[in-house]
Amino acid sequence: MIRARLPILLGPLLLGLCLAGLVPPQGARAQPAAPAAEAPPLATPAGLRGAWFAGDCAAPGAMLQVTARAVARLPADGPARLVRFTGMRQAEGWSIGTGRGAEAPRMMLRGDPASLESAEPDAKLRDDRLPGETPIRSWRRCPIPPPAFAARHGEGLAVLSSLEVLEAACGGPAASMAGCIAALMGEADVSGDRLLSPAEISRLVRGMAWVLAAAEDAAPEALVAAGGGGVIAGMAVARLTLESLDYDGDGKLSATELAQDRSSFSRATGSEAGRPLRLEGVQEGMSLMRSLLDSLLLED
Image 1: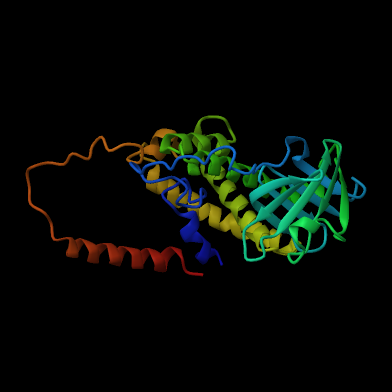
Image 2: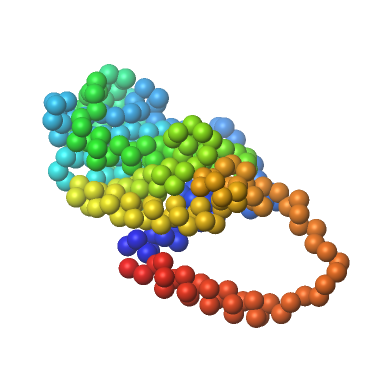
């Protein structure tokens, strides 16, 4: 499993945690944004966002985390459910978010900053009949995060929120490498020193491992296992990333190092002297190096 995830996580930083491909190629022409009248709102109401709990705050039966563009339902016992919205609409007091997939899962939310109701309609229920007979669940705020939920899910939920920030900065029509790197530094720099340490890089990888597991409806024990696997993957990604991009050798990554050769082509003018090498030979050497790295680093 870890080996399958590593190609995603080992992108040319943006850690692959921007899930590779969020930033348009340099020189690519940004697509014009759709007119406001045609673009459906994608965000949940601000007052509904944050952590909600079912039952007594001392020992809740489940947690519901609402972000700007996702809902994660996390039972104390039972599989998680993470729906990341590609569309949202308002209907009869409900905010109805629709996720990806063949069944286009829907999450319905309504309430205010003090109370929340949710519904998860069956895929076969027509939109014009929502919520129908779908069970409606009530949620409450808790003044202090229940320790069991905070320990199990806190890091993953923090990175889920960061992922939305990175998607906005790195994948929009006006995205730029500089803006994407600034967003990454802002989300990952826990210490506030404007540098990324191995621990800060590992935190992002662990959190992404949790997000990937939650998106697959993992059971609580599987989410814990994903965090454990994320520790190992995080250490590997942090070490390889630092060794690849830490040009001044201080053991941390700066925004300048992340942007090196990725934000401009200032040194791409070349030279008129010399003769072209045979690229076939270079390619053979690169293939041998990849095979060696694969056998040393990615064996399960």
